[in-house]
Length: 326
Image (cartoon, rainbow, N blue to C red; front, top):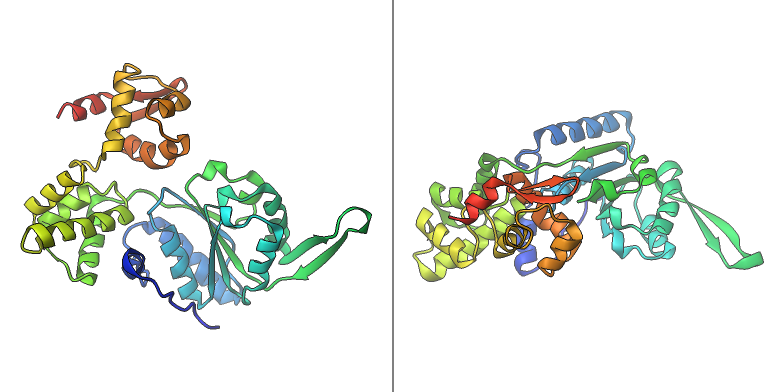
């Protein structure tokens, strides 16, 4: 079976693709999840079957897409990538599924955003590798059954609770990706700096790692921005001082908080006296979407212990008060 061909990308997209781990050894962190995935793959290979359908969940940038690519590489399978919102009609799904190769992988990002009508077509495809299409309307309508190649569906979501129960139950394994340790982020940054031919001192990478929000994608983006700053403003070498100066110019503090993070925390403290504040009220206070608060700001602020959830709403912790006073 042919392996997926590399896409022709340019600029930042090309760099992001270049920095993806090319093997399990390059995939730093997430040891428990990697172990479970590799057991599933090895068992399927021994049985000469396609691996079970997998659901990966976790915050953005933790490596769900990279893991899907590594799974495809491990079993020598073609991989087709799409997203929940992109599949609008049954015909879209039929076009994707009927073009899969035997033993191929379909990766659906943000699968919690799949249309519920589309999900009804996915169920028999996952269970029986069949697609039941309804042709025509009214009394003239008829059902056409299409046989599909055996494939593995890998779903990815940032909000596990938003995945419908019927869809979630059809995955053979549900695996979570957690925030990374600072030590693992430093290893990822060292590898990325080597790939991008960036001269960086360990202390400089440590500063970037602490501001990375415990997320490889964010760490790599910061590395590229600090590299630009070092190239234009300094001698091209990322030192501790250069990294601190560059992050300050980007309005990112030593804990990785952005101006938007602080705006949310200040609103919670100043407008709601530290809370509790409901999500809708908090979103209105900072003119931000509720989903953005849930997916972007809140997970990291809770990870740092700056915000806590209570039955009555969000509350700023003493750590938040002390951090903003610095």
